[in-house]
Length: 417
View 1 (cartoon, rainbow, N blue to C red):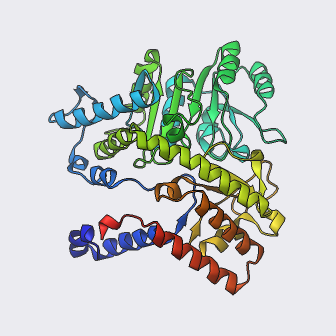
View 2: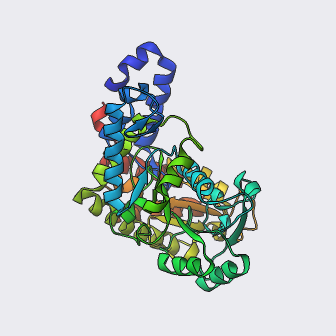
């Protein structure tokens, strides 16, 4: 048992055992899920701190509880750092994750029945961008734009939809799209119809913070994000906005949607924001993109059909059906050799969500471990060999050997031993 789990193992060995097993799984696997990453030990320590004991409804300097001077300092530090990181006028760091952040924005800016123009889920959008299955779709009217056959956003179509439907809010952002966005075009369209602009940068926040992708914060009214993907922080969310919307946004988060903030989580966010302000983070973000490009090219050469014509960020969406597999089969096959990614629908997928045509993968976590272009080629080639020969035990054994070699070469959390 590792040292950091000794006390927990004494008190609750079952939980300790599960955590230890998860640490081992992360260490021995190739993690390609684009929404996952490995935080620093400093982030882990802040997340497990005594701040978890403190209740602090309200905001720094204006709480409903006493004894908040220390959590005020931590939360203000997180606010100041993230504002500097993105060039924001106002920041709220209390959202528990990306979906609650998005819902808070809707409640702050919209009235029931208002129209929102967002990206279609199967073309790269997110559930909270208007999928009919969500509760928000029962409250607001969502209109969804799609990508072209070439895999790009047709801004003329977005404009036509906006003029036809007169949305109160135009939403840019995605969870499975591999291109950058023209935020100025979205802003111009929104201004034409008198709509608010909102960007969901959950997946690409780290790349934006490092200057590797376009930044919507100076242009848009509101920007939401998670903190645990390319930003490499704890699981959580944030909202950035213009000063004139600050009161509406704050009120929508608390008391409108959430109660007491999780200050231990906010402390971990503050640590991650501080890390993202360092020069090393910029190099990390650059390497994420380099790695994604090489991995994408390797998979394309191997026969996978790459959606959206390639990648400009950390993410790859690929159709695996040309190799005679479904997305679910590919995910399960790769998981059997400790390569983890997720099945995912492709644009206008004829298959169902739980067994779609595609897979979604990305490079943030492997880049955190120190892997670069040569490793991406090796991983991509290993994946292709396995997907082309799914029943071959020698190929599976070879893939497991490759994974074992790479994960030993680039160890994860050796300090925890």
